[in-house]
Image (cartoon, rainbow, N blue to C red; front, side, top):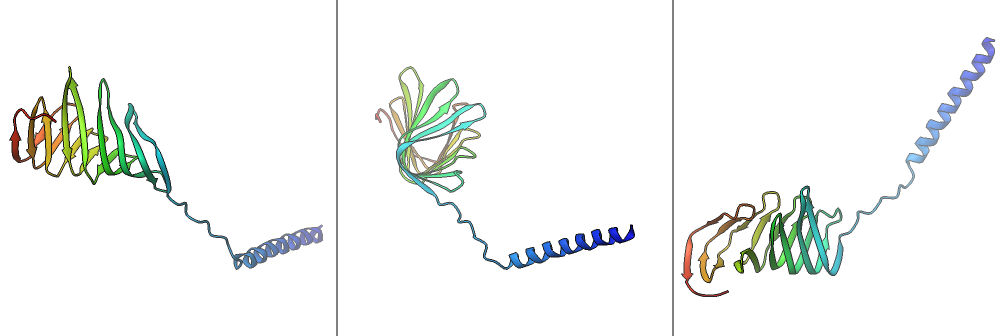
Length: 184
């Protein structure tokens, strides 16, 4: 009886040694390295983002490049952009050199940009500048460059501005000039 256990033990040890030897020999072979995914480029279409509570934004584009993981979109020209506001009309935008973080819903514009905010009965506020940041989580637009704001027929030029689209608050930087009575 002890002899049968010895045979089983020897066979088990030889099987384990054979398996270890096979794995050591296989470890030296060439292993194919997977290539990292490339960014994708799309022409003429629409890209959009959502929040937990609904739509966040949508942008009609001429050309967009998406990062391999899809978290960043770089758009050369936005023809018709919309920043969605719950219970209010959308803020529309046009702009160049737009970067969108689809995970946080943040939008950065590096070129000329124009925002149109409907305020009610045929009243529209317009913001024009050469670069802006929209923070999707707080729905705040930050204009860090000299900007022109037109509202109710009056135009004001400011060094910077911060607009909260949720509350309607506008904080202006240094005022650089005004043009009362001028239309957009």
